[in-house]
Length: 62
Image (tube, rainbow, N blue to C red):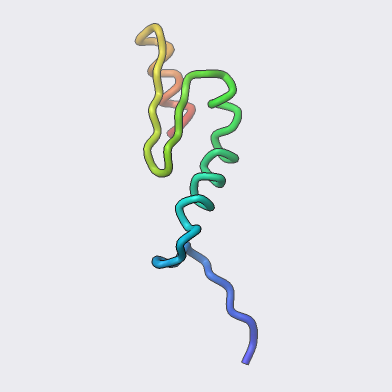
């Protein structure tokens, strides 16, 4: 038959949110260590002191 492998996170697996959070933390680690981004599951908060910095951070994320 072969081996099956998920290509996306399936619904119903109880540790899916924790796994997704770990992946987001890994992907955004540099930005979070710089102190201008917070990630909670699929929500990303970007904050800054100036408008110019804020635009620069948004460009980095997008």
